[in-house]
Image 1: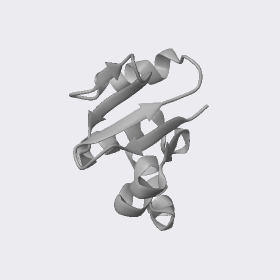
Image 2: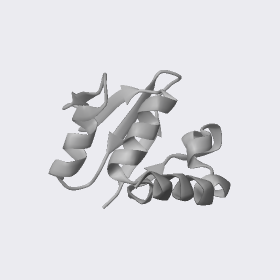
Image 3: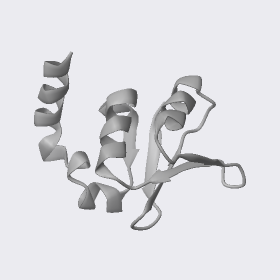
Length: 93
């Protein structure tokens, strides 16, 4: 199962997934400023590099799928940078 990330605007990102997952809910709750939007069945959180890095660290890059806008705009989701990101993560642990 993966967390889908969609850029709402310059300030917000929405996160959703298909089936209830307590680990994903814990990840979202740990992000400062995150909010559950029951009418949309999504989590919203501020669009900051710090929070995206935190989410990648908590959930794992392989669990995240960014929309095309976010992939193009945010270097954290550039496929070319995946190897260097994986190496940094491995060096931390």
